[in-house]
Image 1: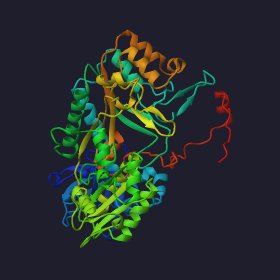
Image 2: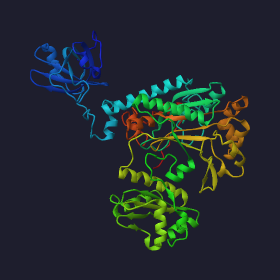
Image 3: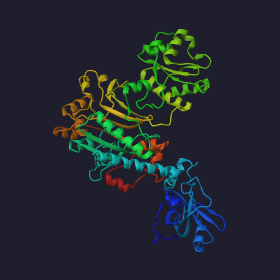
Image 4: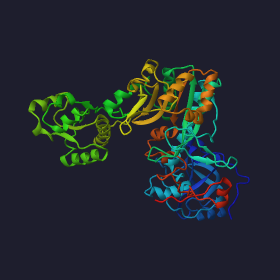
Length: 592
């Protein structure tokens, strides 16, 4: 039978004890990490969320307590009382390595079966098994530390925004379904048969209504839900540090958030960030880096050589320019020894796999060896090398196609090559992306589609182009990126009733659709709306980057896998027919 804590009270955490505690009587609690039986001596490493401390049992220990220690196994739960003593054989590998607790009393609070995998920091156990037994996996130091850091990040966020006049307000978890870019998770209503709530993709509409209500600074650590395909930096449910501010413009929103991140990195990682984060327009980001979330920790910018090759003898280049596309390149400095012809062939296959027709290259060992050399004169080739700043030892990668394909391909290649060359410095580099286009042209439909939600404010000077030239309309929208990962997205909001109606029309929404989806917000705008804007910071992604974790699963307590299932509890799961009948729902099995 397990014993009880009655009469014992923990005085200290295992990992907090130090040499200065020698002579103190303490009570510690935790899990058995390891037992060592040396005959007349038994040592138990006891683990809690703060670390490990060694428990010592010797020939002076009460026989009943000594026998209990002898019976202990990995992951038993213990409470132990004893005196902190200096260790004769110290362990410099752990913070408590100078001391041990010589136990006078111990209770076995819970016994444990042999776990399905060893609870150690470095494990080779496959992730699927660890996720099935997630409660055991979370005992491992790396994951435990990640979640502890996540908690600290959340606390700093609340403290900072409260100190800056923000009011924390919860918004509903069951809301009306509104279009926000992804599929909603729907919740059927038992009372209103045939009708559904939606789980919020974000608190967007509610936080705008709070601005209309007079709460000029709102903050919430908001749970958000999106029914979309998963990847390493995406989960179907996640947390946003969500905010909205009234009587401000873009600069003030960016400044308040820069202040937050400077405080966050100083308090959590003791890192001083730059005074002001770099800003870059969407156009510059796409043309220089091929991405709206560029990693600017290294150079290797995309360069346009279309004007140099538009009249050359290489039809791949000339036809791309003639058809309205471009020819662009990146230069991998000192890469010729790493990127052999075989390695470049692999890059070519990769480029084809993400949409390019092919990849032209120059590999400069002793002399520049261009894959298209026979089609161009020495003067034309020299002009390319000079434009690109290429020299001996470099590799040039060139893509010719429509602009969107060229930029996205070179943007992806840039990251692949930088990782292969190991030239990305281990630093944190923030970047604001501003001046997003309001519309993007969809080649399949031949129409201009909105890049943002319908409440995004266009720049005032662009309003004249709404009906005549959508390509010239710039949104008062902004993203914050860190090391090539998007952390946050936000915008100023439309607050003018007539302008909002005009934007709905520009997005080709009918009056019926406007009323059905946004009627209550449109109605609210008639009663005086302050200028406002906001953004939502991905708490999960921030934590992932600050922990230098590989995946959001490493910073989420109970994550979903790629098919949106949770392996430990085996959800989603079927429900009984009675529950479905109450909701008026019948399950129809879809064919694969």
